[in-house]
Image 1 (cartoon, rainbow, N blue to C red):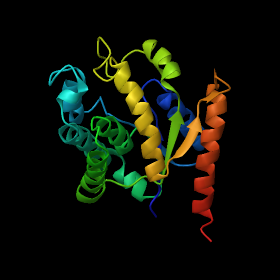
Image 2 (image 1 turned 90 degrees about the vertical axis):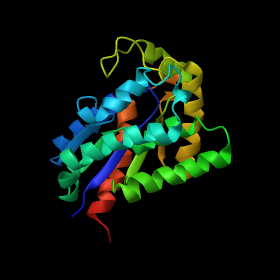
Image 3 (image 1 turned 60 degrees about the vertical axis):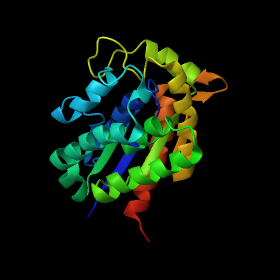
Image 4 (image 1 turned 135 degrees about the horizontal axis):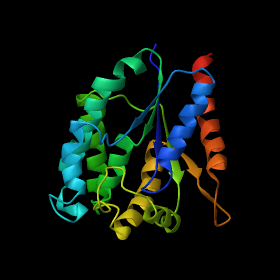
Length: 230
């Protein structure tokens, strides 16, 4: 029996890692078989080209690498992680919770294309490339943490690099790029039917626990439906 693939998605500095870890702990406490996965997988050799890209080896601007080339870097990293680490776990009925996935690529690369038709063509290509040709699993649910840039950029300024870089990567350094990504996130969430969890209420950042409760409720609904298909 195939398990469930759940994605926690958001822009940089929005608390994805915290919400992913908190959700996994709660599901484990319920006695569920859970695996937490992070992308990019900076501990794996499969992320080598991603590191070069983010450190600016191919150009100090994200637009220096076209979305098709950059997407390939990330897709290979996901393929290596899936085949080596969690494919059998998922197929045996486990729950895999990912901090980022193909869903991040959809946004961070599509945003490089200003033309709407070009974006649509890219998104169709990416879906076919990863989920059809490469055989990566399609998510059962994508939960988008919706945090406006004014809030996420403040948190990002206080965060150290996940990849161990001495400075912010080329995405994190470009605030205009991150703002465009936020707008793109909302558009793509609507296109693919992602579930949106707002991180700000009445102009105040919600607490980690408050956000978690809403994330958990969305996931619990999915899992309850899986246990009671009739």
